[in-house]
Length: 225
Image (cartoon, rainbow, N blue to C red; front, side, top):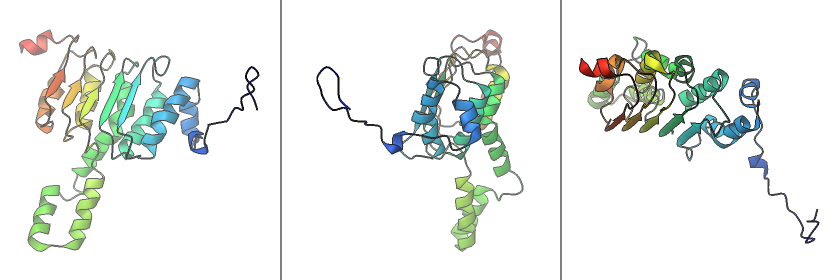
């Protein structure tokens, strides 16, 4: 194949690794609807799904997906966030997130936290104490299993700003999902918030939080109290 004007050979630089194929019907249904969503899957979500150690930042806005995210896309991203152990930055700005979509994104992680704290698991501090005192190899294995099922161990930055339909219910889900994570920055500007009770109650689980942004929310009554 040649360029018609300069008679220069044209080389197809698309490698096999770049030709991402949907490996599930659910992914194809969610991301196959248009080019921008396919690009999102190829450039970010597929790496998130593969738990790629070099992929640490999920960044989406309404311009990168030509509009708002769908509930199906949020559900698939939520599944792969739950399985991922490398993500450090979640930035989903101005992409139409609602409280229902927040459930799709983070409810699996909330459920995992609850399961980790249930009677089916030995409390982490109890296991560590027994290992230090006894040196039990089987208990060490259980500790590693516990840690492997603890989500967001590297998450330091969350920005969900300019999603005005997240609201109080969406905030509740988020706070539960990031509880215990080393989040240092949390940006929730213009997220339709009028009650920070869940964030205030969950603050003790966000010990690394240094930068909290809550601009353009209806928080007059909350601040006054």
